[in-house]
Length: 234
Image (cartoon, rainbow, N blue to C red; front, side):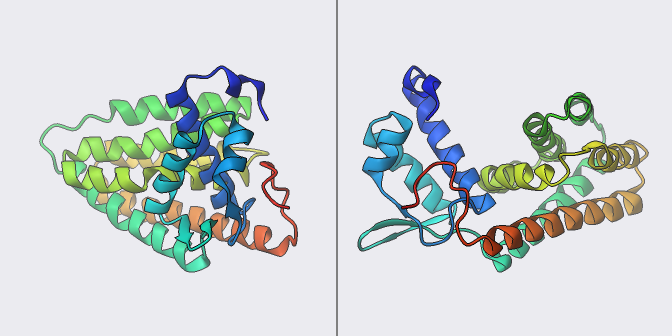
């Protein structure tokens, strides 16, 4: 257990619990069927049961855990779940980009800023920072679209996609620059208002992410006893 968990503010701790559990579930480190016991999680993270309970409720709303008669258990992601999520992301981002490109005034500043952060992270080989900037890059599409409810739908699934980006980018940990190049090409097509190229590049990019996520899922399933970095497995 990290020592800094002992002194972090309660709100930050609650967010940390949710983010950590989400990432472990999405990556497969906590496999389907794992019993998430409030008391054990409370002790592990050094927080009261309240933040843990709130985290489990949030993860249940995201479909990653489920309540049963004897407690809360990891539901995880099946291959069908992965395919559904990437299908949804494709539909959402296609609409967001089409709306953004057809607005009278286009502003790709936030996208360019996120791409700059991705470049710096790729040069450092910092997978986590790259994933964070990658999420900011795609989130900027929804702001540029100017469609509040479309952005709300993205926001609902954003935490899950954030965890999935960490997993898929980790597959490219040796060199993040090819993924960076994909994002650079997409931005160039956006600035040029080349809609056919934008849609083709977006579809190719998301499909590549989907395939990497499916491979990561298969690798997790193939391991009989996952690493379980949280130490929740008996």
